[in-house]
Length: 568
Image (cartoon, rainbow, N blue to C red; front, side, top):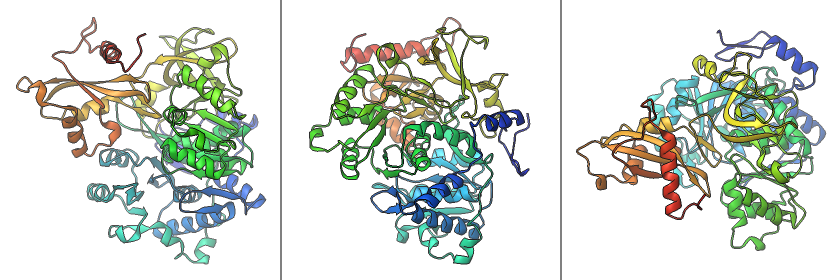
């Protein structure tokens, strides 16, 4: 298959699987797509209410008009230094308002932001550069107290194709040959700004690339067009208003932020408060001081808030809606959250589902009874969900199989990954989510398990094979298998089962030896196991393959014996 993305102007970006002409026509005619770009949505709000407060963080408070002016100046700076349409630029920044400026400016000139989170270290960044052919990298000198300059130096030395390294942070710390993005905004002339003022891409162009795990352990790049991702946001934001103040608590480089707080605030012309810390106390302070009305959390944050020892000292009365997403929410926690937030008139959304690839589902009202276990119904009109049998036959209501979806809110293929796309798409074009579940007779979707070997740590999906490949390079390790172990706080954590070389002694190898080794390899913390189990041999299936199910059962039983988990 030839990979191209063709928009109405005839431009071509190789490596992207296109929507078919029939899909484009259908989605436009039925109103699922409005043929808008991010620039169009932003301009609508600017023209209507330029003085409305748009974004707040610890460094700035910007109105829509002020924000748009900075975006235009940033876009002019990009053009001045030679960034062009379809150039892939990695954006790896902490939670601060500058992220939105550099992101919207890239989109405006048709360059493609590739989202990364600060926890991805040199190993992952090198992989991303190779995968997507990045020619630029926007990053910061620090992530909190963590000095990122050694990372920047190592990545630059290994990737001479990086023509641009743009920096946010303390200017006197920036390495030679890098650009200070925010300082550069003051240097561009009004004439240079005028050249980009009316620029915008085509709605069928790629708006951004979100990174996710693949079946091989190598990161996969998910291209999302303006039309497709804005369709998701338009439906998700239907309950938002321009009076809402939404708090962003997840990393700005995470897909959940873009289809949630960022996108919905922009779509309705509300106010976005960016929290630079995921700690429950900092979230509570932000709600208290900024009078936040809408709050989306990962389950670990929700648990931390409910268990905060001084919860009653924060004024949360402004909250109108709270939802936990990014990972499954235990029934007991949902009930506890409902009781607490309902006590002052705040609605609690049930479990929701969303992925970087686009499929999303939610509840429009607080679910009751068996529906509490459901992820709700499809968010986007036109997204069609099915459950597949072993031979990819479509199953009947309430029959359990792999969930698959196709529609205007769903991507059409990973970037430059023909083999991966063959695995995850059916012949009819349905994306196989890797989740196992059922769809009842009323269209409610239930997830009962996972097809893919993945560890869901909070909102982050971790591919075990990538961790295994790194651990296997340790001199003491003969064989390794990484599995998910249940955790009452994070949902799941990574447990590494290791067989040592015969000459090694069990007591000589500790978890810290493994994590120190991974740190030296440049692997980010998401690729570090959180428990080490040393065994003599792996359990095998009837056909002689590694039995990870048996390993998961083994660690589950150990956690029960240790009192970490309650007995089933």
